[in-house]
Image (cartoon, rainbow, N blue to C red; front, side, top):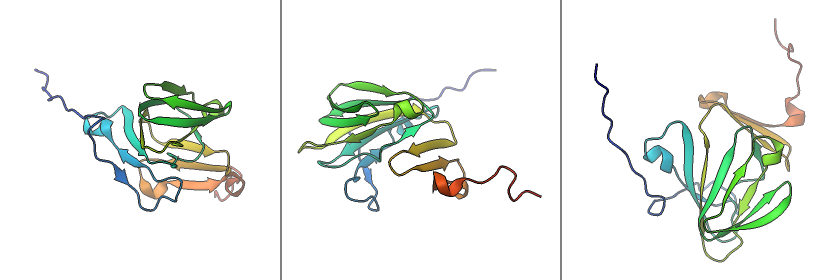
Length: 162
């Protein structure tokens, strides 16, 4: 039995079109390009983000997987549990799983910034938002996705069971 030859796919992180979600509130307008998916990847989530001046990528959060951020263009300020630090072109940082890896990336410069972020593509994904005390769970089935405040989601394990 011979192995099927799969042609190599390619994505250029410097020449990409970004998708902007018009529903994002001011302060969080950022464009996204699924570069890893375009290159045929499945085991890692690799995305390039464009952050216009004064915009953040997402609220301060942490996940239960390792996440990485590489600054491709411009500069971003990254908030972590240790405070804020400015990252410049070429800087690479790793956010560990859990509360120690909490982060938020913001472009405080006048020019757009571009960052590449990657992590495992495992599902379900879980994110915790300490500032708003929310937890989000994103399984593959969209109907099962949930975002709630911790206080609202506390029920007993056996509650409602027959």
